[in-house]
Image 1 (cartoon, rainbow, N blue to C red):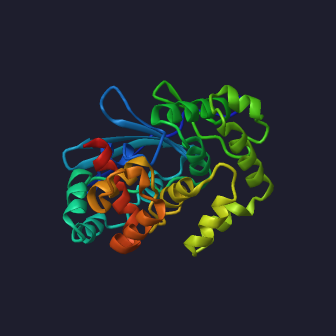
Image 2: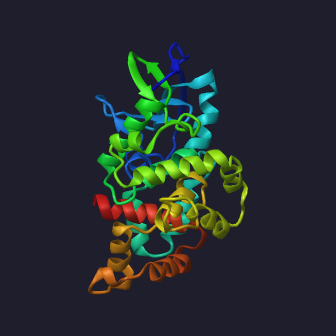
Length: 297
């Protein structure tokens, strides 16, 4: 159970003015993250690796308030986490020129940004996500964090950070099962211990430039299949060229481009080749716009 409790952390605020490509609902509900929720005032509150952030949109301003463990600078944290140095207006302009389908999906999800999430947390979260639905995934991750992460008390509420691999080192398969992981319990346990015993794996994944080599290394981890590997690469390693394929993505690609009568007959390779050809190095971003548009609209 929790040993570390953080309270009386200094509240910090960071304001972003006149940013066109930042719509909280689009960012937090496009399937890339599981620790963000709406509060009673319709603002999003999320637990990130080092703290808790609240994101509020007021006219042309994004107001981010929060507390960070060790009182790290909120501006630095937000710049990296929200990918603020990347010009999404430019990205959207390039992608919109490809075809009207993508142009329409971008118009719908214009405020999407790809978050730079913690690699360890993303690996475990997406193993948990396999054959699972979002409310259930969120519930499992919340219980895992509450049981084994650090507690942060802010505005009289308790929040729990995602447990580090060290904090999960003594968690048994049976304990994971009790949190509702189902068949994923053994996979999470095994992957945790592989990464504990080989501390360089995460570092090497961050450093490796060749996307195919990164994919190969990820696929060696229990519970990481091709789709999970692609999600990890896109949402933690900023490999914008990967194109994760799930039911929604297969559906939208078939509806818009392939037009096979039975969409279950459309194979992954066919979609990957099409995405590579059409979207090139921005395939992952195209995927997010198409996925969000197809699922929400």
